[in-house]
Figure 1 (cartoon, rainbow, N blue to C red):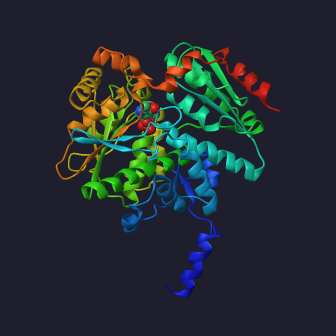
Figure 2: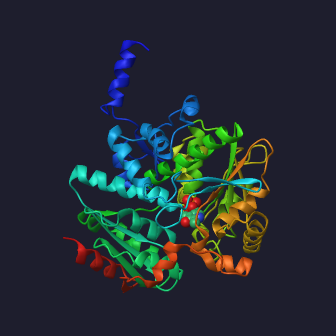
Figure 3: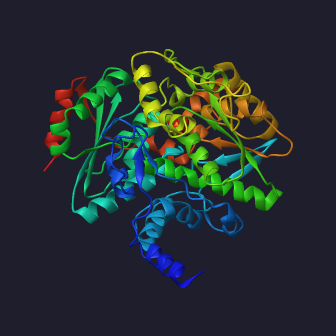
Length: 478
Ligand SMILES: *Cc1c(COP(=O)(O)O)cnc(C)c1O
């Protein structure tokens, strides 16, 4: 290395050089820093934010093999952020100290596959991996700028509790979470409403999840209200959520390299909004040897149809045993589309405008497929129940219904040369009804969830009306 190179390297390490810039998939915003991207969420041109380029790390993998989860998270995230090293390290350490397993995301051999357990965080779902980090990151940025944030969210289940646990007790943040009254599972409702911290406000809306999302949209469209009261969102379009999820693809691949000598690995990902699997795509673009990303959907199969036919067209949403995947418009899909179109922003705009008008998006197939990196398949309700039953009977391992969809689809994409990692996105006890239905016995329990029954709770009712939501925010804003 020449001395001038060394000097540059030093400046880089001191955080003086602004690191990665972020651009919009629709190409109409000025490039911004990581901190701005995190606080902005959705780009002002309606697009999603992405790093200008992907750091190439293939030559670092051997060295990273022996790192702990937190040390690895630090290395993977570092080139993407504009936060001083010591602060990033502290953020990462605090975010994963709340996980109940020392490996954070342990990998377990189950029959022909490896299960990557992502559910050891405070709410027992994989969304904790991203939202524990995002909560601490928000707090850190707000402290730096001496400002406040009012997070408003709508949930049909898992996101609400993970977001609440990500920011509970944080001084500069209030969180308001709407859920459709009586339409989430008992456990999911109790997980949210038993959090009594002064900055947490649960709102039970008389209506459906779509009603909740509708008023959330109306609220965010009132730009003067939004700016005046510093409204923020935690939905899966926030880049920091994707970034936090990139880490466990590295972790699992490096673990398998160590134990099995595997050179390339396949991942099967139960998919809803395309956030989790997109993180795998980012890892692959950074040089992680991923042989295949196998996308698994339930009957709400818009993404499986896309990857097998090249057509992205909306169907109607059907409720299933895996409710967090009951999605027909995948909010992170636009990020993938941007790369699929070779970073052509005007192409993204044209496709997304057509889709918003109700037309499908069609991309050409090459060699009969949309993308050689992706395979896709669907697990029906019957497949889900059968997978839970057989995995328990044959391997003594309980799958939650989301993970079971992936486990089912994974069996059709096994390859002798590449180990298959199935992402386990929730603890089975979160969806114990499905387990009972599959096995005939109420087997799935977790002490944290069992303890919810006796706890005091707090929640306010409201009608599905944006003015009531505004009144709630106003009541609690100083
Ligand atoms: C959110 C969620 C998913 C889907 O993840 P996406 O990032 O939306 O694709 C799958 N399983 C569980 C349990 C979830 O909570």
